Image: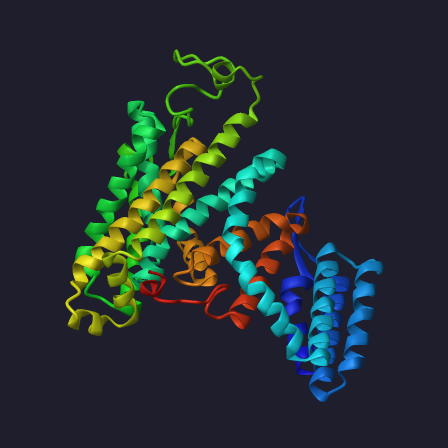
Length: 444
């Protein structure tokens, strides 16, 4: 009964009511069938789990199998409830099957998955490289956005995952790189390739300036200061109108060209040939989208390769030593301030590179793109993926950025599904999707 009452109390504001547009403004509509179906799903799921706990596993398996069939065949009030019912019933079936089979099948599967996991990074790279061959415009745009966040996650992973510094304002470096590219591109006519190193340098310099006064702080105090820095950058961008144009943003950022040799337009007006003319292929608007995708993919792979190499160098080992035990690392002669500043500068530089790409991809930059929620999303990718894990960050970015896109057909319910997925991950994998944190010195 407690589960029934909790489902009723929580479901009433989340599912039972809905804001609707009316002639005089907004009104409140009720969805009692949706609420009743949601409560029934929770009740049946809790009842099946209780049966498993009491030893009636076979009966629970039968209930779960019947619920799967019902979720497929019965017309539910909404697609959201249909998906929830199907997913919950499938989980009951898996839980009951595990109770009947015991741990041996899981051990067998684990023994098979472990060696297969070594091939996962290469499989992901092959899939990413071949995606433009079968993906349409929407798929490529979504993949470009996911890869941008993968790059941001790998950049923050240097600061948080390797050096152990919880940075809650990483979107500030993302914003600095974007604004440097937008201002230099729109105001001075510099191309993306000319702005890229300048954006990285500006972000790295801001990371060093932030690091000098705050690296003496630890834990929550350090996180709060970085959070404040992120808000400072956003507020400055919103109020320094003579430079950033305030809340109206900076537009007219030059589009990405083919290494300064060709443009992705049908009839270029700046003296460059078009991409289609240079290579003798028919002009297609998607050519620019494909090139944008390959550029961010190359930048992300460069960050990955850089991180994998630097973590086995002395500076990388010093980061991990400070992360594990700062006092012991200092006793062994590690210069805490210099090592942390290096982590801040390098991590910030990669955030600036991602910002430069974001600016040239969008062609417009405004303060709303770099709010607190962006820092939260990037930090969530690192934490949910497993701090220090490169592959985990990729999986977390696909989940956090791609899951809402995948459930777009569920409209207002997709954020609820996203939140439920986050709760499930932190409940069953509290250290991240890939929680291994082996010292890099063992990989030498």
